[in-house]
Amino acid sequence: MIKTFRLPSLLLASTLALLVPFWASAQTKRSTPGFNLFTVEQDIEIGRQSAVEAERQLTLLNQPSVNRYLTSIISRLAAQAPDTAYPYTIKAVNDASINAFALPGGPMYVNRGLFDAARSEAELAGVLAHEMSHVVLRHGTHQASKAYLTQSGLGILGGLLGKNHEKAADALSAVGGVGMNVAFLKFGRDDEYQADRLGAEIMAGAGYNPVAMANFFELLRAEQGRNPGKLETFLSSHPASSDRETRIRTQAQGLRVTQSREVGGFASHKAGLRRLPPAPVAPGQPAAASNPSGSNESGSGRYEVSVPPPSTNFQQFDQKSGLYTIAYPDNWRAYASDSGYAVSIAPEGGVVQTANDQQAMLYGVIVNHYAPFEGDTQRRTGSSARSYAPFEDTDKWNGSLEDATDDLVRQLIRSNSYLRAQDGQARRELIDGATSYSVVLTGRSPLTDQQERVTVVTRGLNDRHVIYALSIVPGAGDDAMTQTFTRMLRSMTVNDEAGHRATRPRR
Image (cartoon, rainbow, N blue to C red; front, side, top):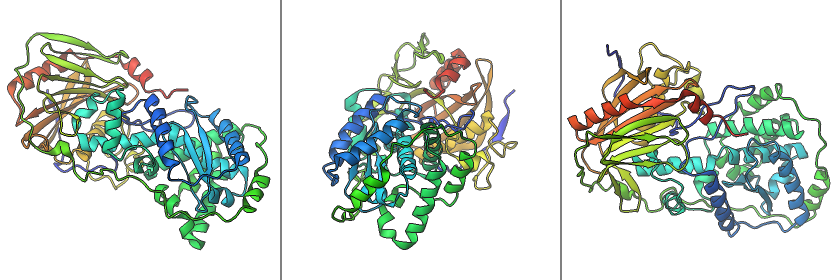
């Protein structure tokens, strides 16, 4: 029997974050890297190129002893970071404004003004641990991925970007290129909470009391009232929140600080900097526009959909990590992601190359892994800010598939604003013996200028994450696609244990 649930036609989301993990349940709730079209190796290469571009715009402080001191601090911190594979570097910038930032892959910069404002090595280390956490959590390329998804449509979710460096460069070019890209430097409040939390853990492991991070944020809040100009850049890229200090202090009570001596020399380096000529206050770090062309070429609405009927003979796709298998027509092609768990499966003509050399799916099926509610504090705690409840018996995040489906649909509509839930209903289904749900979304596609039908089907994993499949078809749908998608779903097998292994953070 099929059970239906009321789902309003207008769905809103507070974040755009597809395939992103929430705070993992462990001894401490550590966030894991979110939805990302780029590989770790690409993060490192992007950071290397971005550092070259950034240093053409920055006035570096030519004080080797200061840079060696900073390097000693980040080396100690990096030894405690969850992933030490990144080649961290750090340089001081001759700028009187209070700021520090990190680029993807490891390059870090700290302004002379921040060094001068810090009252101890521990406070300085707190800021550096926070910035290092943005690197570990891959927030920079995560933000760039979300921006690219918004421009490129649903097809990119199925792994159409892959590891190809030229395609990665194309994606970055579309959202501002390398250098001090706004996507690499400006994060939302939830990203800052995550970096605070992980940064506090790193500090404790390195022998610094995390309370020093909270103390420095308290200092910045006081400084904002006295000299807001010095904090303009920092506050524009680090959203202020009245509860950040409280969160860090509360977390610090549950962390054991490793007994360790400081690197030492903070006071002498600070005194040496004060003997130098005053540093200028830069007018603000430049950042590239998120869409320099001012338009989305892929949304031109001139693509015709011409695909052959799906074959009734099927072949099997095996996800390389063993997370799932699925059968598909043998006249379709599987575009597997080079990293992650995604696959796009489409017939000839179902995937097109757009005018700005991006690939977009017009007709086909996407399968992927999804971890709900990353950073979404309000909905996880049952806040009244939640704008709708698609399942009548669900009013807060409790690990249920209903809530996960709710979140996924919100995010799909957030990044593809032309879509709306059809008839306001979700249907109960069955995939590989487990309860699943399906939701139908419709809207006029900006690629074809036709009505598009997107069917989203979710199946829960035993770690509260989700495997989802979605079909994309122009018009109201056709019987051949409906029958094919149904047969594909019935063929699908899911390895819950492989899914759990896949979502564990690397140590």
